Image (cartoon, rainbow, N blue to C red; front, side, top):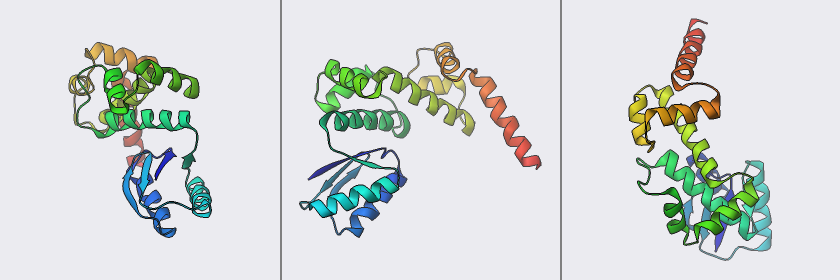
Length: 186
């Protein structure tokens, strides 16, 4: 039996879901971002209990098909941007469409209808979050970050970063460094 879980986006979320399944005596085959495949059939009582316990942790069991599909799209994007070593070289639309085995137009329309933003906007927001993270680690140059996240140029990355955050990448990095130094002085 497949269960789909909203907001399950990290290793910590997976550990919380695993703990809740164990409490209910449920065994899983797959426990991945946003999805759990359970070996046995789940009773109404177990389902309701799991739903309540997950809500307490900020997670939500999904019931309707559109929400489940949107959650799958979100998880693919999050996995792709935050957890894979390199982004797909081709179009993200082709990558997502192939992963889910759906026409991209259908996926894009469903996502926009449910989330109120496009898949492309969602990808950009996550790429900018990844840029922030990489800037804070201070291990890669802006050119290396640009290459790693498949930007056509450093200028494109910088423009997109400023459009989303209101700051240039270098100002963001300097601001965070100054803030960290001020905390160290305390």
